[in-house]
Image 1 (cartoon, rainbow, N blue to C red):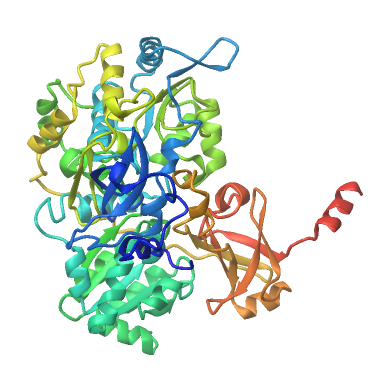
Image 2 (cartoon, rainbow, N blue to C red):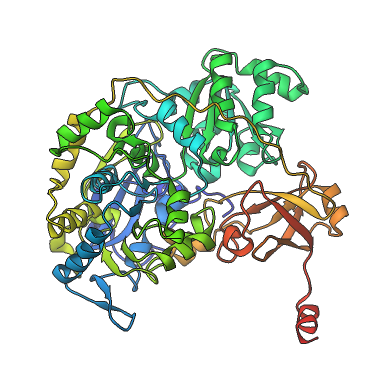
Length: 628
């Protein structure tokens, strides 16, 4: 199927004639135990039903929730659960021996070694949590960083990020939401909006539930959708949207033009007028953090037009991480880490004398400090190195760090550098909650219980951190899930002065010459992500990876539609079939995690950077050049 939602036809088939290869002939419905659950793959918070037997998940179905996903889920949410059932799933802790090899260890032994290493680096340890954790788990990391490690060097953003984004999240996102302060954009208000502007966000690929609402709103009442992007994506076309063509880095200029109403073409003028209609919404995605001044301009546009502004990240745990304080500049509840009263409130709630008052480092700064030796240790939680803005630098940081502790489900790149590896539970194996992009709390219980498991059940991240704190002789005070929830609820939202939003402006844009292009791209819904591994049928439905350039750029580079295009950056090249597309000249678009180890790893370039483009060198010619 070409659709990301084809699995829904199986569930609604009235006679059961349609079945999935992932479930067919594996069990009978009356043999299954069904548990309410929440999808862990994006920030939508879709309600699901997990069917399991003898401690093993057999299938996942959409559950009905009229306010969120109605009765639909995407295929990634439906079929992407086998990652937790792979044979390489970590069963016991691992500790690096004197010969430099990882070997199995008991929990007491591994925790003691980890505690010794982290105590030796107290105050000089960086914490990278990633964006997939439940609210309770990421809150435990936030508290552990400040209480046990005496640091504000913690960041959940395992992706492109900026200081401007951190300021934006503190000023415009923290504490705002359906279950936080009762305000903010929801699925319902988004569906009723007369006009929606998307910036740095592709709904079908990055939050499929949002795409379904936009498409439904267009079909039901003619909602106008506009997108600042390089090209009209399939999702934009299916939602009846209008492209406002923007080369990477020009989003700030576009937003200022939409605000002022000057310098616009017909589509731009129509968008500027539509944004002033009552109920209009501006949606910004996490990718706008890569554009200097972009988030500042989006906030300015919302204030000027009266449109509502909402930030929609890609991963399920990112919204909750903000409220939990997994940012160097924020404490739980949106409290500024630099505010004395905010620190006093949190210190009193945690029963400690004081919190660290030093400015914290963000993900990029943590990586750099580990490379230079300013940080001696790293605590990493399920982060994929290929997701980071500079994977090569991140690998160097892991190699240079004196001590690395990793909490993860399955071995990855971090494992190869870790001194201690501690296994943790998958979403189906623990209770918890996600906070979706609306700020709506999505509670779920463990689908799989210890007495149902054929193997030992791993503890949650929060439980592992509690045991690690005990080994360090530090009082963390989070013995169970209820305690973590109650403590976070008692802290509540910050009622003091919010941090001011950044006033960063645009920077000069790169000027590509002939044979060069500005790199653009985003991740596809189905790509090489680790949480999609294990289901070959799901992998078979991935959309083919293509490079995209304009007709003029293709002619200039000496390639045509269907040719293999080579895109070369500082670290190397990727080669993909070319699809000539209507888009700005001297821009090349790539699917960021659908080729090799990822575009950033293969080329050393991220969106907004200059790359070289041209025909791919045939294998025979490349061999002759090497031999010569």
